[in-house]
Length: 148
Ligand SMILES: [Zn+2]
Image 1 (cartoon, rainbow, N blue to C red):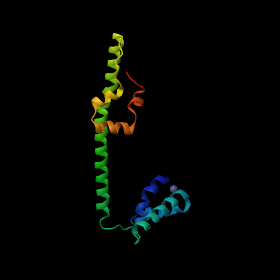
Image 2: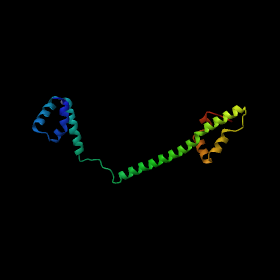
Image 3: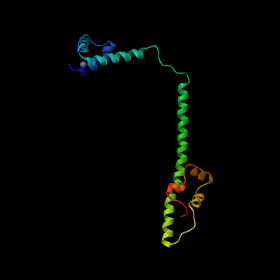
Image 4: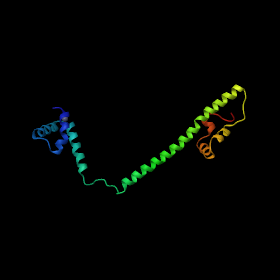
């Protein structure tokens, strides 16, 4: 018979619940098939570990601590994402507005003395500007240096 048939019986064989005929068949097969014998030994090994008295123990409040850490980590991620999201919503239209302004002034053949710093200061609060300056230079982000 094929290994497939015996592998399906292995757990029940280890449990000692096979009928005599099945048990004799599987024992005969295990004596001749190294692969099935290896599977059999692994099942026995796992059963021994599971039955072992040296079970891993954790402190009583272990799960409480883990759940509280997960919860605070989620709160932190949500907060940071909200900060980034509100900044991104304000930042994305800036290049579009600059492009429109440039187009407008180019068509008029006129160059105003407006710097990017003026642009940013008018659009963001002081706190947001300091966050932006800390993270990166706005001019670098847009690939532009100096006045518009
Ligand atoms: Zn086999």
